[in-house]
Image (tube, rainbow, N blue to C red):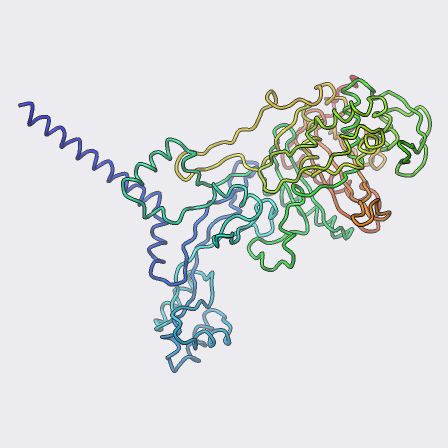
Length: 583
């Protein structure tokens, strides 16, 4: 009796296994690959039309609502078979009929219709369903429409430098060329032949993909960009560029505690839906990540922090300001070339942005010690931001150990930093003294499998570059800069502690060396609330015209952004929370 029973069990097992595989196949065909297969079926008999698919990119509102900024749109192509349509003796009437439905260039229409031995010509792309239905209803031989899919950017110019765009690669395939589109190409790209793999191979490979996500990296990316904040930042940057005729202006809004970038923008910008309209491809590059600049006096905040952290100075340490200093046969001066008096405190150095005061901190620390502390902010490394082509800052002057180069670096001259590297270093002042990883993507929604949250090093895992008490003290000193010195204290907010510093740097001459006398880069950074910051804002504008100092060009912009963020996120007042000086 055992023989028949065993055979029955074996047959039942085989049937169950087959049923499982069949059910799995139906699931993947109808649910996972349904839209793909449908689109491919519609296109397989249409010459010249390629199926296209790609993962989506989303912004995230403060209420965790996903907003698509890069997705796939479906429409129709109007195409003809000249070998058939061109034989129609009513071609002029056909043109008029089609033109009444959708405007079309007559010369182009007739030229393509008269091409001999040509089975396929495209007339118009990206048609809506209503137009396609009307044309199809004409039932004119040789005139037809076919479904197509293409990449679309609903936000148009919004965050264009962050999102990037797609283009043809060396293999003549559409792929990410800039921004997140390029950096996350392995996640966003889609394989074209996934519907035609072996039956059993597909079942088992898909099961494996669910079990182990990294075997199937295809998915959508969910960013930290908040669309309302991004829109506000872009509008403010445009005002600066337009008002001062700057070559360009950029800005970053970041959470200095964890590295999440809330907004990142450059102006002028571009529309990734129509990159062919741009005259120079350089506009697609992200200067905030790729380019390097001498940042000027915002670096004094780092210099003062290193002095405090090393114990070389305190906020109350004093020095006599000579106005100009000569080191290694080279002379440098304060911004106005003047001495500001005797017995000046380090707080006054920040308030008045004195170059000689920053150099005094270096003299108290020693050049080698100062250089070491500055490099600990990661100035000679990249940040690891998830955008392509991150540039590396130029800080060789911090390796010479000469007094002159160290002194110049203390006030932001002779070292050129990328904006994103600058933001990472400045965030350490705000967050208690650790180096964050700036990033734009927080989650990946895999095509097969769960949503994966990307983790970044927490405070305890990050490199510590300052003592917590140093972070508190430099924040207090920068808060006093806003309360007493920035526009003579007129922009101070009654209920909020805001820490900030401006910077004005001469632009280097690339041809003969030295610096232009009339060309400047203006920078500005600030964070708030000063002692438990929610946001750090970095701004810069390159070669603004007929204006000299960053306090003139960027103060209003920074305060507008600050007030917007406070109101938009309902950040509670903190004025009573300001701690006393500790160092």
